[in-house]
Image (cartoon, rainbow, N blue to C red; front, side):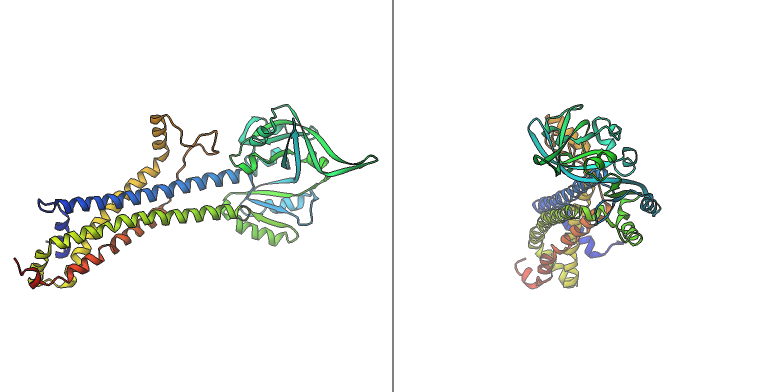
Length: 414
């Protein structure tokens, strides 16, 4: 007695009766379709967020948040710029580095490599290479020993093991009386790391800063500094501040370095959202067929309501409310199921893999051997609002048809 008449009638029309059980079955199917669509939408978005987070963590583990170098080439390794960088807000670590391109050969295999000259103790302050070692010791990169740490993919391609020596072919040739000869340097493999990112695992090597300077003839000079921030998402703002303090240097942050990759991931997420939302739309528009059948069966009752004084606008609201009830029920069930699945996706996938004795992401093939998920409340809200709007649009036509029923014609044969 405390609810509007339109809502009461709309609720009664959704309940199963002996003569309308088929209509109620269609309503249940519509609810299930909406629920399944929005559950899939929330789950897939959470998994894509998880993969993006995993990739971002792996990339940021290997590359610093900020890179400060000089367009003019290697410069003297002085303490002034490093102190200035370290004094900036959010900066928690600064380390010098040298980078150069070369070739590595071993047992007839030749592969291009990007060599990073670093100081292991200070490198741990800006990257997590030391924690990603699979074999060997990162701290074995000591000056004067000409040791090297290789990525797992590169080590496998060269068929090299710990303790073996590989030949570094330098891009700058050596001129002798016999002619131009390539410059070669044998280095010892003391460690193998695995970043989980192909670009690093298959084409990156680390050496001591001093050894790299001697080999590439940049002794006493460095390519630049790398810095780590307390909050990596503050990198663009901190980079702008440092660029103003160091006008002769070039300051870049991780968002600009990997901008194409993360832009592609964001585009893929938007496309997947639209595709899954279309599946929700298909399920939502099942409400059209449900309400068309209800209107066809309830013509007599609608005519009676009209003769009792219910206006066409109120009749329209009856079926709008009925469609909204069905849609909201599906959205509520689907969003609840989607959130529960997203929060427990790793457990669910692990159970399925154990049950069927099959690994979805094999560690031998994929760098990420598990399915991560990150539930973002904003995505859930957007999905729920979009699905609710679709369910609100679906009953417009059947409700409009119901409001146009003429009592005299509907009751003529009654």
